[in-house]
Image (cartoon, rainbow, N blue to C red):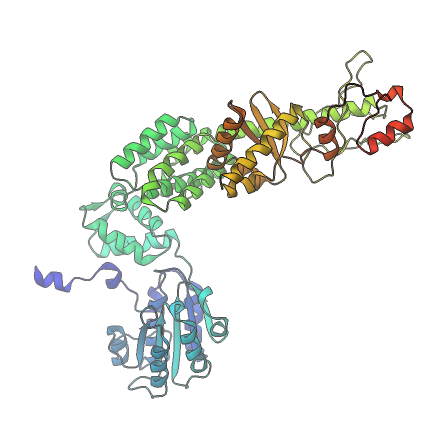
Length: 587
């Protein structure tokens, strides 16, 4: 037993490729390197970049063997000559690997520069493989720069990195760069199937695809997970893989997705509590939910898409599909993304996940609010058309079914009064209302138009002066209590209405409105409103132009009791008084 334990090698070491043909994926890189070796156009510096486990260091070692094979340089190293065996076993004096994570100083690079001038001991080339090259300090890069630019003819540098953006541009310009891309799911699953068959591991196809999906394009991660699962059970199944990764089961996932789709907050929270109680990690739960909703969104776009097999069966996705619209899934994905970003402290993880589920179940009201906004936009358009008719401007009748914003095919001789472009949210087939009869009530004249900033001006309602005064006191209270972040963000809004215990404030920026209406800011603002108004006042934030200054002043100021009406004074006098914001009184 001890002898077998000593001789055992992990799967990713045992199945490490030793020729270009055995490298999984990376066909463009493999073809380019073989062509360079075959034609003799060998560069002096190469930069291999890409995610972990995609074969950068392995390819560098194979390239070093191909350069120094006794039958080379060749694109097909023999693997049996002394140079090939010495390089493969890591005992060659001419192929040096340096880990830049632990050898990143200027002194380390100076020692490398000194050894560059010496001729190879037994090989054709001296090959320096610098792994995790992005970890070198700036001074170390500058020390290597001159040597990398003009090395001796017998030296080849290969730099491997997972973060090429951290490599200095001066180094980039002196290297041939090859990008190693994540290996595809099918390629990883096929390679795992071959490894499992030759290693005596019993594994289901579904389990292998789950392992391939969990590896995120890295072959080393996939082989390590396969090996871990193989010692947990005689046969590697999908349930074994989920247990090894700490993943939640399919039934629990379906229960959670159905609860969210049905807006059943209680059931969703109970399922979350059960999963956390069984030892599941909160981050893993949210990640798997994100993957599931991705698969659900792709299934709604194309039921035959292959990715559905990674997460669940087509039947389960088909059952969940009617519960969601594409917009709701995208909104849920955004909620999950923000929740994963906020999961920084373990003490907050459970609370964050519960709030995340609550918001996910609340996507239907958000859709209803969007529908209500479209209805309001349509009603506003109808009012504008009615006002145009009351003002006597002729409007060309349009047949039912044509767009409200389109002109008739034959324009009349009289000028057509256009009320302005219809908002995009209004239905295209909305009919133009017929002229209002003389007996119909005349709608209230529209307020003085504000400068156009792209969003419609909201109509006034309720006791605006009371709301404006309350809002100003609230902002001052927050400032006095040193809650400056909330005060500075809320100060950008303008009061539009105060009625029914609801204070409506408009913001020109959707970002500011959303930030004020987040639970943390809104709770503080509503508590301040409660303390000042001595009653519950709810805050409603909308996006709009705000109130024109002239209309605001006119609404806020009340005329004196003895002020004369416009009909009882000369028109010129009344206009002068209006220009200076005053009123006319009896002498």
